[in-house]
View (cartoon, rainbow, N blue to C red):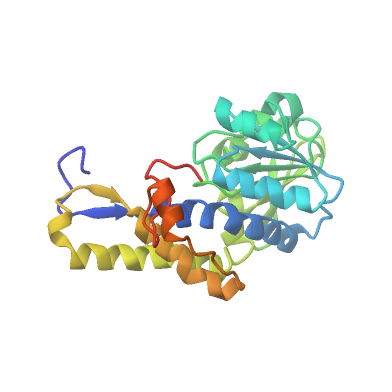
Length: 267
């Protein structure tokens, strides 16, 4: 809207706040992915081969979650930096074509479209589980799957469907390709969401109390407010911050009270 001249008032992009993207996306999905899979299927994850499509913040949380359950996790990625991160985190990095016939669980986390196509699902093994936790229902080609000749869809229970192919092979598709942590479970836990909602509240207070600082544009939450959101949540986890001494603060050139990192810092 800003690019097209349609934005009528200033806005703060909360999604790119560190205390949203690195917490809601990673730690929230680390919790709610396996919650959704377990509620939907009650299948033992340990020993299974799981493919995570995408290794951004959501993919990182999902990979950690499934590895924690004992799955052997394989990552697909287009971004060489994320692929290198995955490899150095100990995951196999492969293409979907390499593993589509042998893996047991497929999870899309990319925010893109057409990640798992009907032709891919036709190659999957019997009772493979397919789900999405990244974006809308176009990450998985549900329309293409429904259009395959002879494929029959049956509801096992709400938000859990089997798709049976003419040869008798079945796939288990969660939440009809929509966000499985919402469709098959109850989403992220409240404490994680508290980070995200605190961002929204503090952003609104900032815009309301300092209108002169925000001409019509899209902004990122200022670093000191991002740190404030984190600071507000530490006591609940029993975490105690070390206080920077004035001479230490002067040595690294930051205020004693923060912010402690430059705007471009990658956490």
